[in-house]
Length: 491
Image (cartoon, rainbow, N blue to C red):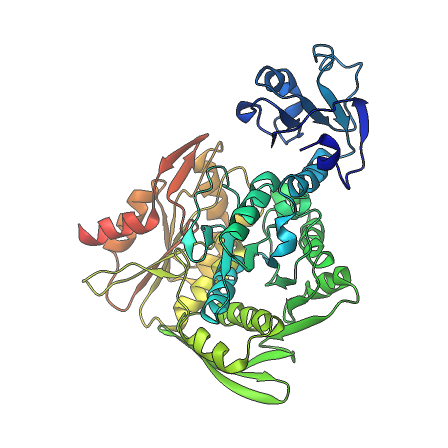
C-alpha cells in the first residue's frame, strides 16, 4: 500500500519523502519486517522513538513520529536519507486511522456494539452476543476473556488487553468479516478510549453499565474516568444507558441529540424490571416497556445481572429483535467463566470464583451471594499492586461490613510489597467488627477458606476470576483460582 493511502484522513507533515510501498505497520520494533511503517509511541515507561534505529535495521522504510520529534534531535541523526519520516500531532490517534486504512476499513462493513462501564462489561457483552447469535445473527466477541468469531475462539497472539490495540483490532475485524461475521460485540475500556484506540470508529450501539471507583492510578480523578467512558457515546449512533447510575447524564451529554434508550430497576425507564426475584439458580422479573409487561426468566444469579440483561435486551430491541425470541434467548443464557462461577464438588460446599476487583464489584458479588446463603459468607480477596491505592481500605471496609469472615490475600502484587498492600486493605477491615485473617499466599488462603466451610456457608474467591496467572514482580506465574479451589476441595 502507498504511504499516501495509509495516511488518508490523517493530519500529517512530511519531514522526509518516501514513495515506495508499505508492506506492514508495526509499533514493536522486534516485529518489524522489510517494508514496514514503524509507529513511535510514547508510553508511561517506554518511548518508541528510542527504537527507531532498531526498527530500521529490521527493515522499516518509513517512520511515524510525534510532534516532539525534530530532525535536529540526536534520535534523527542516524536515520538513513532513504527512510521516510512523517510527523503527526499524536501517534496513538494517527495509529487508529492508519490501522483502519491498512485493512481497508473492515469495521464499516460490520455492525459494532460497544459496551463500557466499571462493572458488567464482560457479562453484558456475552449476553448480547449470545442473544443475537441465538436469534440468527452471525456474531463476533471481543473482550477480557478472549475473542471469538461465530462462537469459536480466534487465535490472536498479541491481543492481551480488554480492548486490543488498533493494529490488532482492525486485523481482527478483517478476519471476522472474512469468516462471515455480521455483528461484533466488544468491551470498550476507559484506557482504550483515553488512548485513542477507538479513534475513527462509529458504533451502531453504545452501552453504558455503571461507573464506580476504579483505574484512578491511570485517570487520576473520577471526572477524568467518567469523561473517558463518555467518549464512546460521542461515537455511537444509538445509546443504551443505565438510568439508575448517576453518571448517565454525562454519557448522554456526549451522545448529543442522537437517539437513546434507558433501562433500570429503581427509576422509571424505557425498559424497567419490576417484581424482581433473585435466587441461587437465577432471577425472574417483569419487563415494563411501552405500556406492556413481559415476564422474563434469567438462569444467572445476582441483581446486578438483571441490570446486565436489561442492557442486553435494550440493545437487542434497538437492533430489531422481537420480544418473543428475546424471552427465549434470555431464558437460555449461561454464566461467564470467572463471574459468580460455582466450583463443582461432591461435598455440598458452596465455593464461588468471581472477578470483582473494585469496591462496587465487591458490593455486588457479596450482596448477591448473601441473598441466597443461609449460613456464613466468607470473602477472600486482595488488591492489585501498581494500581489505585485509595480503593484498598474502602474494599476492606466493604468486605468487613458485608461478610461474616474475611481472608485477605495477594492478588497481583506486581512490583509492590504484598505485605504493604495487605496492611492497607486491613485498615478498612479493622473499622468493622468482622473477624479476619491475613494469608499472603493465595494458594494457602484458598485452602484455608475451604477448610473452614460448612454446608450452607459460601466462600467467595474474588478479584481474579477467569485469570490463570498471578503477577509477582514483573513475572507472570501460572495460578488459577478455579483450579486451586478444585484441588483444595478434592484434597
